[in-house]
Image 1 (cartoon, rainbow, N blue to C red):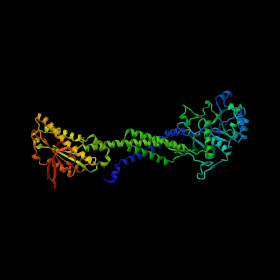
Image 2 (cartoon, rainbow, N blue to C red; image 1 turned 180 degrees about the horizontal axis):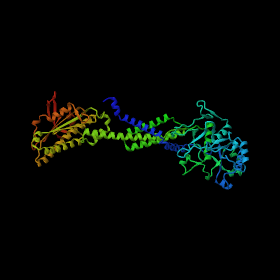
Image 3 (cartoon, rainbow, N blue to C red; image 1 turned 60 degrees about the vertical axis):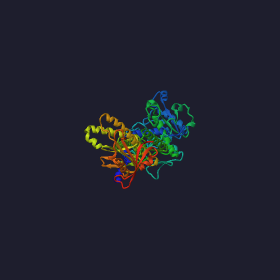
Image 4 (cartoon, helix red, strand yellow; image 1 turned 90 degrees about the vertical axis):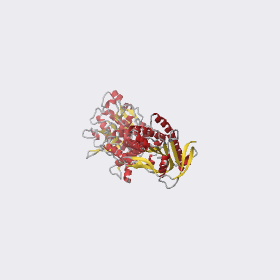
Length: 637
């Protein structure tokens, strides 16, 4: 068998191949967008457990128009004069930036002229517009000025807001977002102005922070509509991080000027009837249908941009596609390794669970460290690879176990079978047992006068009689720790000490003692069979047994379709010759010994202290150049 063939047969190579193919499958599914919703949900879950910024945000204040404000005024939309009064108060309180998140493309008298003049005279006020051909224009007095920003919100396919826009363009002009305008006003007072990054001219830089636009396949997104200048919202400010006052409280003088001075103040509607609410990652862990007002969402975005400009935070980065796919491949290979190495069902389940928990911890830690790492894709690769590899290994081991049991026959004891299986890697080579040099005790048995018996009995009766004898003797071999190697007519060949190598003299002695005990048990059982056979007028032949201990070569013989595990060598030959020595002189008459047990000097050295043994002498056995000292076993001591 070539090295290449062996490698292809290797379970390790198969596990690696399964890991790679499983990863490729997940990558293919990823490009089809099948895991996007799970990936986005995993990011939301990670964000909600992130440390975040504790306490109230000291830069953002909300002036909300709630249901009570509308009921108190008795009309909607609120007149321009009321907005003008609110802006005047905030200007007097020295707000650094004032954002009006209320459309005013059409005047709402009374007070429209006052509002127009208030907006024109106060450059710290930013009004909103809706971008696009079907958009909503800003107040006419501010059109084509830097006091306008679009308040368009990007909503993902599952209805959750995770991204924000900095810029939008129609090919002729560039529009700034509402939150960016407010953040730039705040940062201007801190000496920070927007610049282009020297290394990436198409990227904006605030302070020392470069904000790179989101790509179509960044993070967990697939084929994202990335038009405009988008970035990921980090939601480090908690949902209730912004101090909020009602419009009625502001107009009635209930708001402390110190709470407004130097802040970004957002004026907007939070009344339920206006329907300006959005889902965020926090919505998953809060009460059902919990939504954030658009006003608060713009506050999150503006706060994040200010932190960028003051170098208090960094943008969330994402892996490039190549690193994402390598990340998936890594976990696919990990799944293959688990399926290859972990065989116990409960350990497999525990290892998979620990692996998934480890993956979750890594993903959470990375996101908290401002890196969005994929979770759903590598988890899918891990599970698919581990499942397929486990199924393959289970099927492979089932076939391998059946193959081994076929070779070692059904007479292998449970202990030996378990030893064979647990140590299979030591003696399996290319799908068949590896040849080994072992020290074994070989045992041969044969019935005296079987040829004559076979000639006198009918075929069916002969087979039944012989099977009864073979079944009885084979059970004795198994119960004494041996393996039946072969049946030849009425003869049995058995080995004690295979297939697991014996490494100590104590183990070799145990095999020799087991073999002699087995021979004596055979003799005793044969006497019982004689009584049974006499009752049925069946033959009662005697039995010869030869036993020898020594080195053999153990391995498989035969073709790929029919293999037989056996032992060969001079040790086996001597045991066979001991069994057949002077067989014509051995007679089993009624009342006399029915079984002759001959052992060699090699076996005698291991069993002398446990059995009654008679020395016969030095004999020249057939096929042997040297004489062999032979002993006869009489019984146990």
